[in-house]
Image (tube, rainbow, N blue to C red):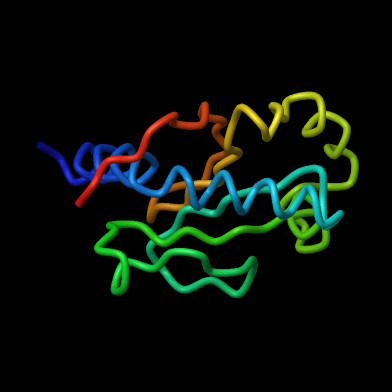
Length: 122
């Protein structure tokens, strides 16, 4: 199995494992009036944006998860001002989906995944 396949499988497991934490963080971002557009950054390297929620050394995860917002992505020019309306149209309801920005060594992409309804235990 390739490292990329292992990495994606690990992400699927992590999403199940941390579904409750991620959903709560998403709700907090919205309910506290921080943003209507929470984004979870999934990364392996240290980042200088977002707020780190889950790190591998403490959680046993393969990935780190940070929470950010569309507004922070715009301020850092990761989403251009002219693309904001397109992003909002593509954005899925955070009550039912997570917006992930996955950063791996070869690329970075947005994906939307449904919230997992149950967690797996370690």
